[in-house]
Every structure is written in C-alpha cells, then in structure tokens.
Length: 381
Image (cartoon, rainbow, N blue to C red; front, top):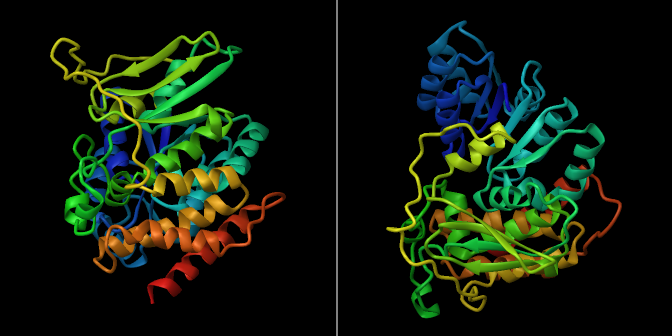
C-alpha cells in the first residue's frame, strides 16, 4: 500500500479525486504539481501540507509564492516536474498529467525507484516499450488508474500463468453515440464536453467523444498486459457498469463491475493488493439498468481505427498520432475546426510521417511528437 505520494496534476479531475482517496485513507502527500489553478492548489497546500510543490506556469508560481510566503518550497517549469517526480520521501508517484508532458517526469520517478500509478495515457501510448523496459530494470510497479485498465488488472489477480484469449475494453460511446454522421458535422465543443457518465477533464472528454480515448487505451493495454493487438476487443457499453473483462483460454470471462466512480480505480492503484473500506456508493444490481454491449461504429468515429493502425504499425507512429490528436483536440476546443475535421487532420499527419520502428530513444519520441505538432499546424494554417 502507498504510504507517501507525489501527485503530478493535483488540480485536475484525477488529481482532486486522488486527494479525496488520500483524505479518506490517511495517505501522506509529499508533493503536488499544478499548472495554473493556484486557487485550488493553495487550498490543497493548506490541507495536505506537502513538502514540495511545482507550478509549471511561472507567472502562477510567483503568485502562489506571494500568497503562502515561506510555508514551503515552490519550484517551476518542466525541470520542476522532474524534481518533484524524483523527490525523496515518497514511494509512489501518481501521474495525472494530460499529454506527452508527462513522459519525462514518469521516467524520473521510475529512476528514483517509485512505483507509478499511471493515469497519463500518453506516456504509454508514445513510449510504452521504453517505460515498461525501464520499470522492469528498476523493479518498480506500473499500476493502472484508468477504470478500464484497472478492471483488467483486477480481473487478472490470481490468474498468473493462465493464458489470455482476449480482453474486452468497454467504452461508454460518449455523448454522440446516437448521432448520425450528418449530425456530427454541427456539434460544438460544449456538446462534446457533456459526457453522459463520467466527470473528466476537457481533453479526455473530447477524446471520449471521438473514441480516440478508446484507441489510446488499446495501445496502453498492449504494453501494460503484454498483449497482441488481436487480443484486444473494444465494446461499446453505454451504462459504464462493466469496466472491462478478461477472457481466458478456457473461454471463462471475468469482469469487474461498479458504479462510474474514478476514486475506486485510483484507490486500488494506491492500496494494491489491499482493498480497504472506501465508503463509496455500492452497485445495486437490482436497480441498475440492463447491461448492453454493441460494436463501435468506426465509420462515424474513425479515430479508433487511426489509433489501432498506429498500434499495428508500432515504432514512433503512436507518438505522431498522439501529438496530432492533442493539437486537433485543442483546435476543436477553441472553435478553430469542426468536430469531423479532427480525424482527418490526424490521418493526414500520420500518412506523411516516415516511421522509425526500432531502436528509438526518449528523445526520438519527443522529436516525433514535436514533428507531428508542427506538421498539423501547417494543415491548420
């Protein structure tokens, strides 16, 4: 069980819910990082008394220094993220950052010997092989926080050595599951941010609306559970009660169920292998809606296919796909492009990249990400 924790991204959706878990279980919080939300960060500092805080936005860092005085050390920038990720006195780092910015801090935390509770999808999507190899070398655990990967992780407990036939990643279908392709032409960012089941940050909510989120999770699952692409099946499950399933060689399927509450997978990552009483809402099987499953519609939501294509190709193409997606999502959120242009831009960038499949480094991953961002801006302009 986690005894002391660093939270990267403490003011975001995952970070705030992780602090709720820490509050309930009495987990010591050694370090916090945030970007600009210093009002919430200040509250967190006063409640949890961390030893070190990183504010990546320099102007915001100066302001919070003025507010709290000499109460504790405030560091800033990317170098600050690396420092707090590797700080002494913490046994686990929760990476709740959004985007590829979480890659280097994750590496720093692993190299310092910390277990990693990973909610930052882009880390494993862009550099899964490098991260998992380093974790094995340093003998640290990578503990999934995403509800789907946590579900798979839970289903695998006690089944070491048993052959996996398939895993079933469930997807809510997002806010546009029932919309036609013509209706999708006019949806707005405000429409896309109305997720039917989960409370999440804006980037991941848009990814859910495009189903890119599920594509990213497919790639994550390959690295987390050492799977082949053909072993991963995506199912749309609108109720978000079955968080994912594992089918074994004997055709038995084990599923993990629960109400949609991210605190449960966060808690399991922080307390594994223990299951302390949480006090969270229990699933009432007699009153929950019928559980339905359907195949994803990749014609209306082609981002899922683009992610699977990147996974099949391997190498640096997932990093390119991810970088292009981040920029496209940002452009949609600020009203620069329509919803259906997101996958078109990503595909253009992927098709124009000369992939490197083997013997790449972290710097190569970052270069590929930078290339994708520059390339997509060319199409945007």
